[in-house]
Length: 247
Image (cartoon, rainbow, N blue to C red; front, side):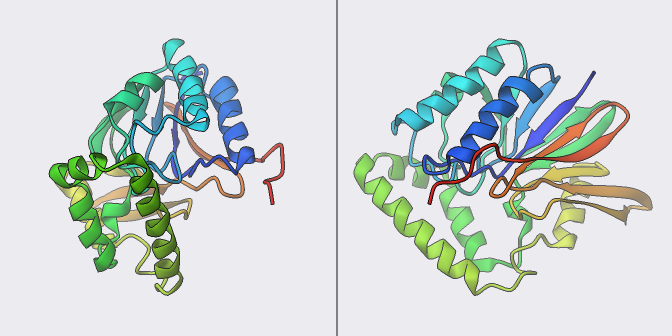
C-alpha cells in the first residue's frame, strides 16, 4: 500500500524508555514499507550538538539509519527543542535535513509542512528567542562552547520554558489563524501539516475561495501519534506504549 507517514514531538529522552521503544517498533514495522517518513521537529527533548554522542542518541540514530538503508527516505525539519541537529547526525542517521518550511507533492496535492512554532505569533517572547536562536552566527557561537556548559544551558532553558508555559494562556501557545492563512497563501497550497502545539486535529476552513485544511500532529508523551496519508485517505493514528514509563 502506498503511504507517507508524518510524526513530530516525540521528545525522546533517555529516561522515557516507553517512548523510545515505541519509536523503534514504529520504525521496524509501520515505516518499513512507506514511501517516505517525515519527522517534523522535536524528535528529541533536547539537543546540545552533534558532538554529544551519548549511547541513547547513538541508539536512536542506528535505528533510523536501518530504515533509511532499506530505501525509505527519511526527512527531518528542526523543532524548537532540536534546532541544533546538524549535518553530522543527519548523515549518521540517514536523514535528509529540510528547511523550516517545505512544500511537497503529496500524491498530487501540494502540501506545506513545518514544525509549527513559527505560526504561534502571539507568543512574542518565544518568537524573539526563535529569531535569535535560528541565526547562523548565534548557533555557531553556541556550538563552540564546551559541551558540559551547553548541557547546563539546556537544563536551565528547559526549566525556564516549563515555568513560562505554565503561565501562558492556551490561545497564546496555539497557532494564529491569520499566520496560517498567510503562509499557505504565500506557498500557494490548500493543505498544511505541522506539529509543535501537541493538539492533534484536522481543521477545515476557507482560503482564497477554496476549502483548505490544516492537520496538526500529536505528541508522544502518552501514546504514539502518527499521520498516515495514502493516495485516497488521511488518518491520524495512535499507538499505545508496550511498557510503563520509569518513576
